Length: 196
Image (tube, rainbow, N blue to C red; front, side, top):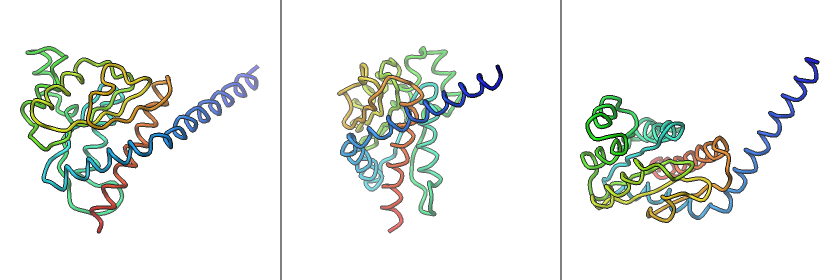
């Protein structure tokens, strides 16, 4: 009995790996959008702007990952680049959430930290989060550019940002894995520029 359960578990792992690989392979069809988003990050940083990032749940960790790789480093030594994850400051999140409501936790930070020429990068597997939609609106009012990494059909955020990549598929985990790949591709472009 245990052998049968283990074999089934191993088959399930193999199936998940194949689904992940299939989702990532479909990013080839999004390579121009990924390149455009990468170039927007580079242009923002070259012009003296900063990158603000946001997302909810697992996407919050992707937002933090992007910011820390820009400020720290991805692979090679280079200058530190200005980036702030709006998901990382627990006192700001709880203060804003308490005083203004959860829908405003990102938009309020964009209002305070965003400047014309900055780039707001949003991560969402569904594109339905109201707090991200309000952050995008706040960024537009601040004359910032916007970018969205989305999944499924893109939800309410689809078509609203200056740059977007929508990962095809319906599994949240597979979309998040693809977002990680896209994030690393963007960082490769950034470090190629700053290593010259």
